[in-house]
Image 1 (spheres, rainbow, N blue to C red):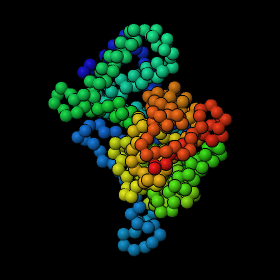
Image 2 (image 1 turned 45 degrees about the vertical axis):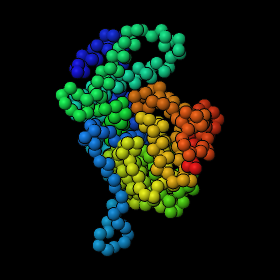
Image 3 (image 1 turned 135 degrees about the vertical axis):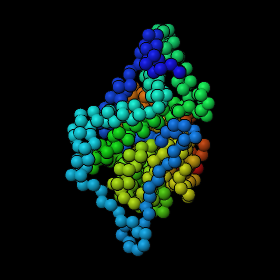
Image 4 (image 1 turned 120 degrees about the horizontal axis):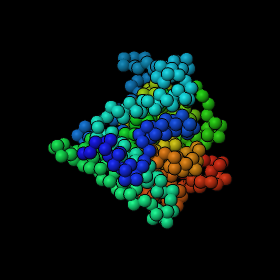
Length: 396
């Protein structure tokens, strides 16, 4: 395979001129600091090789923190604000937004630089192509027809080179280091959220959430609690550091009936640190690796994370398979669908499509045995301004 530097030079010479990796990382870091969404993620654990697939990491209650007896586990107290500030200063070099953004960018860059050269090349090509597709999506059909043929050829060659990286190598390996666009997408999500996990968790503990955002999250969690009941189980997909746990508990779900899954082991570490031995947290790829408990869940929620997943339809299909009959699938974004649309435009590498509309739930994204019982607000409407985005599907 051609070296990465040569590939970039070739594509630039052909007129295909994407943003570089440093620009991409800067965009990631900026999103981490300036996105007020309560939960992020995304976030699935990438398999770098078929025969080197990592096992998911699950942490759950091992015993009661209040009861004594042999084998009881003493629950650790969440860190104090003073401890959090010290951790931020040590990890990010300070507590200001600028310091955290700079350190986050450096962390992501370090993780990328430590990857196999083929992974680094795949990241670069994938980023180029997503930026290119994002650019084309903003154009009319007429404007697309007038694109420079040299740019089109450069994009075509970039796609060929990326597909070659995904194919089995000529050196006898059973599989490439990364095998699909989804692998690369998930790897970038993991790098992003691992790099920002401590800062995100600290922000939640030391800051405050907008009142409108809080009310919308409370409403979504109440919907989850109504479906879950006192003896059912619920799953928070893209749980991050467990931001929904106190809302779900307040809504009436026992802590040990709450499960969370996230791509980022660092987010899961923070979740366990903040919420002790009650909820069950798992670090893995939700779509490809997560199995879930038995019995199945009575409710599953995607809070401000569905847009981060590489394949929304696959994610919803997986969630539906984990639901009991009569269970609810809840999708919410407190800042609304317009917010996600802007992310699609400004960060097409990580956010590739908007949230599903009512029409899509009933047509192209319709799921077998799933009935839409609460329609989400449309972007740009008064209802969006009042409610954000909240969709509920019931398994029938």
